[in-house]
Image (cartoon, helix red, strand yellow):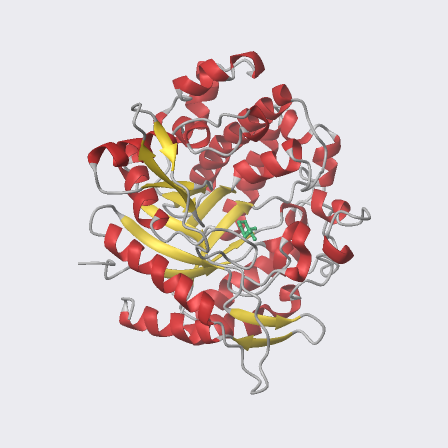
Length: 451
Ligand code: IFM
């Protein structure tokens, strides 16, 4: 068994992180364009102005994807490249860029998977209240309509929103991501509700204006939970914690159920409705109907997880990892079990085909004296995670995997200090070098299994 024969082997990127925002006339400003200009916000003052210059080099990048043997490429559209002010006039140059990218992918036998929103809120809409303004569902719907009209003759697969937990949590609770403003809890719940309404509206518009039957999903994130042992009580403890709310309100966005139950089950989880009652906006039946507009696939970004067991008192508890347990270069725990248990729990609860929409690791990669980039830690990470994914493919409907990321890129507040790519990017010369992991991934794709 293992991976399906039509398993989708892909890699992912996002617009601001790779395109280069100074390129392309007619693009409007988004909140990241503005945020990076504030002194002290980003590691060493880096910005996405040039990034990987993918806007000009996308043909070379598609060639690299082909060399790796990718079956699919997941990228996001910068809303302000195609509708500079968020609503209204369409920028034909922006449309032409994404259109040429889609054509290039298809000519090279690579299936495009388009994400509508990977954190680039148009600045003009931010000034009108952004996610706090209920009208944003319609603004986002209008954007989805343009995307459907212009690209869905060739693009079949869409994800609406990437990692709402992050752009609300990091943007408005921690305030270290754009727009960098701490909002009252009450407002963050209202924003979250509008994010979900916007998702629903986009699904409706994609379906209504799609030029072929589309496959539509959503791509949240979360820390997974996995049990310490296969004892039923440990498994139950991990499942409970995985779908529960955070203890601490200042971290409230970091959970699965608040963001996914409404979309897939048509209701907010009871635990959250009770715990957060004092912060909640008015939630109507009409909202819930919109939010739960049926989708076809479930995307989940997955990097690591917590080990959980059932404690003596019959309450789940965290299990401390052994001292010296592996961590990535950006200090995230390496926990391959999470990509077995996470999809298993998600499939049991939501019963939707699953794509891993992001997974990968940051490493301290260097160009060696031989001119190559040897990244054994990334190969080891991916091999361990993919083995677990192969195992769960026997128990859940796992359709595809998008490695994060195709190439090194602008890692938000950490700037270019982090390297997540299969492909090394020298940001000065813009030279690309396939890392050892890219060749390893190519062999995995060919073999359809992990050696
Ligand atoms: O680079 C990010 C991406 O934009 C969203 N998911 C996590 C990645 C690694 O931090």
